[in-house]
Length: 201
Image (cartoon, rainbow, N blue to C red):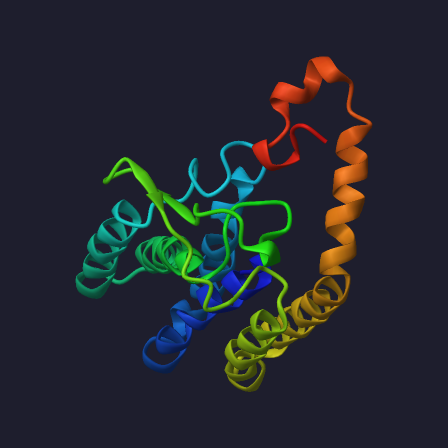
């Protein structure tokens, strides 16, 4: 799924905080946004492996949520929502396509790496690939309550990210060709440092 879809899902985890403890809502929304995005910082260093923990992250999130429930504070709520968003990101990547340059070709059987099992979890392809039309539909569905319930800044950020999502969906397939051509310009000695899906181009 798109990074923005994960960001919306993470921010949506702050909605219960807004409803029950609005004083912590700003921190919760920021934590959801950050937690939803951070796992994809491994894009060029072991993508969906280095910062994706589909087993361990949910365990850490449950512990953090428990602490926040019994000892609510800006810090504990931020940690709880942030870890929950990161966990949700890692788990839901399984629903998408494989780890490849053109995931719509369905040639990869690697969705997310499970450090607990020591192996890759296969993609389910319920959302065929990041940037697929159904990915945008999901992003819009999750973004809607954020726009309605969020205050000014939250609504604005959500609308901007939804615009970015739409542009990405329109350009998704051509971007793969652009990336392939740019990778082809990288000097051969640097090829080992390219993500695996770009190597050999």
